[in-house]
Length: 310
Length: 313
Image (cartoon, rainbow over all chains, first blue to last red):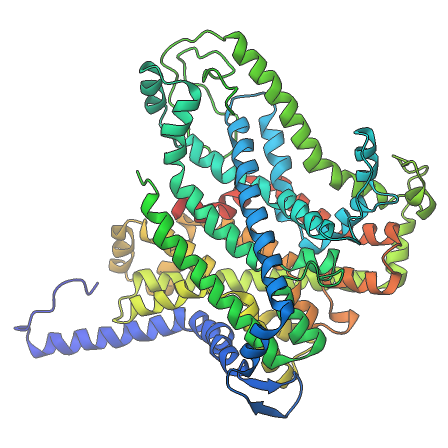
């Protein structure tokens, strides 16, 4: 391979041979990587830049008429009182599913990390919902949450509770979607934490135990810091996935009632494809994109510093 | 967690290597060095843990069982109060009702066809691209890799309006091409394959080169055979993703004949109304069972793929 340094004293014949080889490599590269890179350019990069452009237009999807209005769509979005509520809903949903998912997932992982009989089955069962369609999961949970005939009404009844108006009254619809999101993601979080827990060297724990550290101290001082990189990874992936969550909201509430479960992602869909305001929808998509980039950047900057890498 | 009083494992350590009962992602544990007594606290703790784990398993599994049961219940059985746990008689009436309402056979075909074609092409594109990024020396290799890597940060929703405009402009709505092509590019797969390829011994490839094997031969005869676990993992993750994909196919497939199962499910809801639970849950069962089966059979590989980002990260 061409990792050998190209000597300037090389005879001209060898230099042209290298040239030929370089061109042949470029040809092979284009053949192998070209199709994938071309698809990325056409269907990911092109629309990304086009989306910025669309966001400056007063334009409806399917219409030939478009008027350039600069930052008009953004001005409209920032002045719309609905926007603050959508951002609050998005934030609430994201924080609740990320924090809740990580807390419950870690607890589950700690339980699964003990050599208990049957833990393999529990692990399989908890992970299963993660591979299911969000639309399907939404449907089956709607049936369970149904305040008249639902399974949950029965279970709450056993506990002496009555079923809250899950579908009709704030804040229950959002809580319902948060619960279902947690149900779907917890097995994934637990499994990733479990892999991390099993990578904690036993001699480190033993040494700490010999020094008289109790289980809680060992967990706080040794296990938790070593889980840092994994926590960091989960924080980013779960946040990004929450901000882009769509299927569950689509199938369970359609963003309703009265827009109380409408997140930014859902607003892109509503504006772009239900109302058909392509320009305004693109502006919302761009705002969401910027938020995603900022979240990633902040997490990289602030969290990574405190993360312990082995 | 503060109630935990001891750290001894539930099974008394014997000093022998304990064979791990769990799946692939688990690293073998070093054998316990000291024999520890099971304290009373540990017994109580394990008891508590058992109750918690059984409850967790119930909460996770029962919704799926409940869906399965409902798909066999008649509508009066579903809407009685208090709850009727089991269907009086098991029949496929709800599934027949689904077939009468939407072209479910065609939708199953669409889902299978689109999933298989997309997954296959995506994996091949990713393999070829990753091979080029690792083993073919060109000056702009790093730039090409950054191009792939950055797409992992570009969310789908920012691309969806412009891509829809493009596909609609080309008259590709209601075509398989329109559903499949815009999602074909492989970023995640390419990334994982590249990670894997970089760990392969270069001498292996150089030996093949000396034997006169060209790049394609090296890719399919040398690299692919020793990367089977990674390829399997990526294939399964892609398969699950494609099967469950909703937003894009729901925009492109407007005619029921082109709809995939998830899209057909919301279409069915529009037709049947939200209260026709037996029919809706029968269709939901048809959508979820194949993925549950894939998961149960190929669990290790699938989980390895889905959690790969964390391990490599």
